Image 1 (cartoon, rainbow, N blue to C red):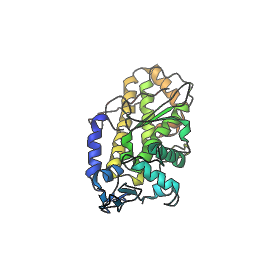
Image 2: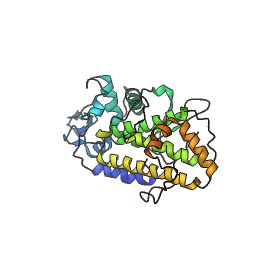
Image 3: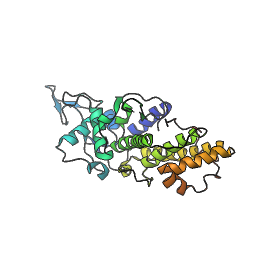
Image 4: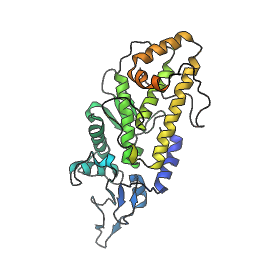
Length: 303
């Protein structure tokens, strides 16, 4: 996903770009619509009357209102006057001002997404809102042998579209399923292949092109802003190449390649999805990277 060096440019594109697709945020003073709450927050100005009272805005003194259009978002929300809509809207514009009613709006919206889209509860994780270390900097999930897994979510994720936020959280929930799988094969010698394959699985899910039955599916891919959809496609293409490159690196070590095959046959996603989609995986070469930002190594995961 995003890296620190790309974040500024990534958000800048979001702030200044105009999309022809459904836009869920409206500036209640100018009536201009936006895809991202961050763009609305950056552009929309509060107007005040002489007595200092805010005029023409909703939700106290917050100029950006959440009015979802895309069915991938609206189908999981109840009536606009309900608490669910209020929490989602407030969470999305949380960086404007805090409220006594919603003390931790980022966690409130995260909880709503976990429950409605992925059948999880926020209590199943040690949730941290803050900067994410490593290469997956929108969010990360780290398992723990003695306690709850730690789900870290970057505050920048609340500046992009709700659809992209939902997709990123789904990416991490796929990782949670992966961590819970048991595989009897010792991965010594091919951990890099597993790391790349885990990221490929999560990225294919995020792009909504994964056929694996995992109990939930990606429902907001059609709601993504064009640049977000492009970002996900590029990452998935990179992950595909990283898997092939990692296999290339062990191809001449026949005993390791044999153990990798045993591991893949014992892993439900590799067996049901990757092998059928790549029947020539033992012999296919990676070739050159799909773009210059795609490096050979995938983010490390714990087995």
